[in-house]
Length: 312
Image (cartoon, rainbow, N blue to C red; front, side):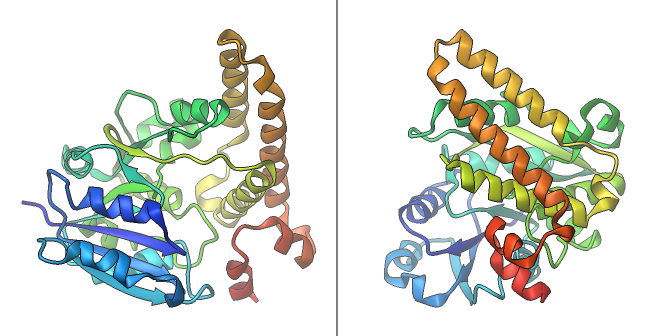
């Protein structure tokens, strides 16, 4: 039996984390340990979360960090190094298991072949998710599972490397063999690792049967900032992203969403789509050129100010 740990970075957690933990503890495939990497100890409510684990077979460990110590790659890597499990599942605090078989289905997808290094889950929209974001979830997380490798680059392009640490399972031995997540990254540590795995001859599994509820209704400015950070990560890793365009996939998403809104009679949602898409694209273009921007502009555009403080 493969031993499985779940790693969750948290920052000012609330109701969603409590629901996530409750559902993890009811999984048909048991979890050995939940490793919490919490930013700022004053926001951790031990009385709320820790009693959930009392008397159960799943252990809880909590490590507290400061905001400036947190890094998307290094913090997760520290937790995986601390684990002794065969499989480490990375999740975010707002990602809720859809059913009792999430961990089982991730494990089966990961163990289907020796050369599968990572398996990531299908993300379903939450009940309050708007139609534009709902369509984006279906675009990025379709109903059919697949396994992607180097032979798919010509057909899939940058989507070959697509992977999401909102919910993704890693074979710990392969993860460590490949050096793990990059230790200093603003964002996108999952795709950077997946690209390295593919280039090393491994494959990435998309497990559509492993489902989580995870979506956002971000306003335009937040989308701009998120895409700014995404583009910064791509600019900082030319060994992965050089020659692979993200813009084509973005345009295809806009076109398909617009046609879907028209077909389903949601014409009043078209302005929202175009405004949000414009903000995403603007953020991406600015992020690609971040080295030419003044520091004040970068501080305004980023969602991760601590990353830039660490950069000096």
